[in-house]
Amino acid sequence: MKKKILVTGGAGFIGSHLCKRLLDDGNEVICLDNYFTGSKENVVELMKNPYFELIRHDVTMPFFIEVDEIYNLACPASPIHYQYNPIKTIKTSVMGAVNMLGLAKRIRAKILQASTSEVYGDPTVHPQSEDYWGHVNPIGPRACYDEGKRCAEALFVNYHRQNNVRIKIMRIFNTYGPNMHPNDGRVVSNFIVQALRNQDITIYGDGSQTRSFQYVDDLIEGAIRLMATPDEFIGPINIGNPGEFTILELAEKVIKLTGSKSKIVFLPLPSDDPKQRQPDITLARKVLNWEPKVPLEEGLKLTIDYFRKIIK
Ligand code: NAD
Ligand code: UDP
Image (cartoon, rainbow, N blue to C red; front, side, top):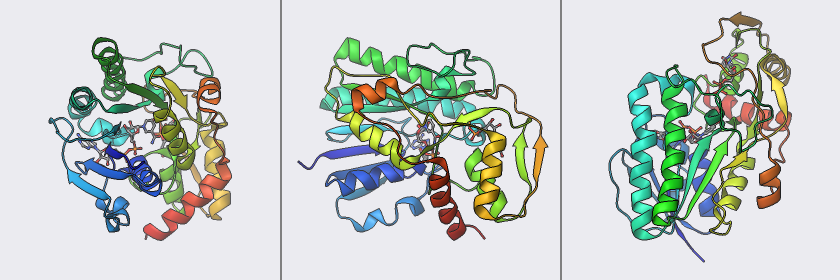
């Protein structure tokens, strides 16, 4: 049955893939975005579909609409962007959650929150499972994002407990793919753009810190399955790829796959940069019967093809 679905942050990297998938599945999609980090370019193809609607709106302000489901993705996700105006980042996570939860409550819609592995901070347990409470510096440079997202999770569970709102909390681990912003400063886009331009590849620190990189299609499949779970299941649930790589390994792979002449340079490590991050996806395997399918090299090739087309 055709559903009416609201996607906040729908013109961003992940949001644009989600809108496309929801339309392909035969739904009507309303994409709401203030274009802070997203762009119409990401969804221009979708605008040909009469069941797609694009609305310029800031989630820190209330919004009224009748829909069946809400995916709440609005929030800058790269450290450069979320630290550009940290107060606004907190407002987007917290006031955005309040506004969208209030809407979900009134219209009895199901609502999914795009949370993040950053709620685990610089983790002291490895890999991270959902019952780990995290190790977050509340006054550090990442706090505007991490604490904003933690507060949003608290709002979600309390709207559920107090008002029976049907919620789902998805903790997304590092995700990459086409439609990433070339200047957003995240490691995959930075390295690919640098490699394609034969510029120095900038590793922060000695490159021994690790991340687990998930291709965007895998994430979208996880999100759709999570939304379809019975109301009793609210999460939080980790959605990520457990394959763990050092940042140095990533740089070497990108150089190999692009055939670049770039050299690796080592720059200072930003403060509070997590040393290790890897999802424990036991819960997602069990509840969603889901696991990532796209290996890093394959996903990197698809992402490199995208950046070749858009950068000069
Ligand atoms: P993105 O920056 O590409 O997308 C965010 C979108 O939200 C953009 O289109 C932006 O314009 C919009 N937005 C920002 N503030 C807004 C506001 N106040 N009102 C309306 N729209 C606003 O980032 P992304 O990687 O696509 O991330 C999407 C979501 O997933 C975010 O909530 C992010 O925290 C979460 N997430 C992403 C990752 C990742 O690795 N990409 C990891 C964990 C969590
Ligand atoms: N990083 C890097 N060079 C870059 C960009 C990022 O070495 O040009 C490092 C960064 O310090 C971090 C890792 O790559 O250790 C992942 O950074 P990103 O900003 O992509 O995501 P997050 O730190 O939020 O996981």
